[in-house]
Each structure stands twice: as C-alpha cells, then as structure tokens.
Amino acid sequence: MQAQESERTARRGVLGAYASELLPAILGGEWTVCHHGASPIWQPHKGRGFGDYARSFPGPLIDHTHAFRRAGMRGPLTWRNAALTSEPYDAFAREAGGVPASAAEHARHLRAEHGLGSWLHPDLSAWFRDWTSLVVIASALRPEDAARFGFTALA
Image (cartoon, rainbow, N blue to C red; front, side, top):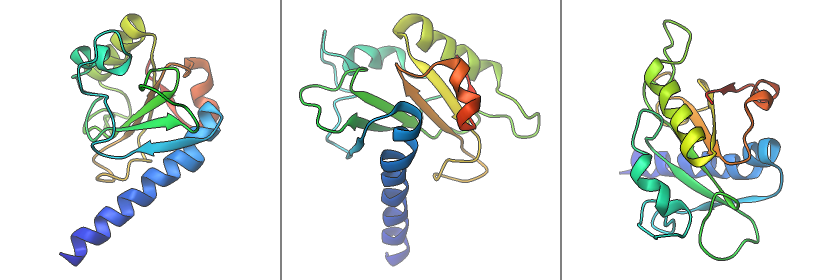
C-alpha cells in the first residue's frame, strides 16, 4: 500500500514538472494539470473542442494520457488552451533507434485531420522507463522546432 502511494506521489511530481517546466519551455506560458476526472478530453462534446477529436485518437501514440490547460484559461478545453501528454509503449523502437511506421502514420493523421503536432522523446516518460516514451501533442507544436528541445517531430 505504501509503495503504491509513493508511486502515485512520484507520478504527480512528474506531471507537475511537465506543467511547470516542460510545457512552458516548448509552448510558452504557464500550465496546470487537468487532474484525472476533471478533463473532458474523452467525453463527447459536439462542436466543443477536445471531445470532437476523441473518436480519431485511438492509436499507437495514445496511452497513459494527461491533459494540461494554459493557466488562467476558462471554459471548455480546446486545442488553443490545452496540450496532451501520452506515454505509450512501442512509440519508439529502441533496438532500431527509430519511430515505427504505425506511430508515424498516427502522427500524420493527427496533423492532417486536426492540425496537431506530435513530438516524441524516448527517455522522458515516467510511466515505465525504457518501455514507454513521452509524446506531447498540441496545436502549437511545429516539426522544425522539435530538435531544439531534444524531441523528435513525428508530424
């Protein structure tokens, strides 16, 4: 029981670091974590931002997700005021040193259908190190900027 609580505390700390350090560095501004249950990201909200995209999200880039909101923003989450982190398995082929075709195709779909950028870092996931990668998905992510922050642009 104590080990589980320690693990939850560590994960909250990592999410806090994503909100206070990582997202401000790559997207600018201040960010807050949308705690589990507080995010409408997977709920259907016709014509209201994130929910519209939920049907097309399943794929190799989406697992262990967390939504983040720009600090001070009100109203429903939309891609103008939110970002998504995901910590999927197999989004980076460690042995081959590259991105599998299925993950790249999913990223291209998110860019073409929704205007979303997807960046990957194989070593920043806190879910299961060496098994999962960190993927950041947001409308403001541009492929040409990824390398400057140590990420690989997926699309």
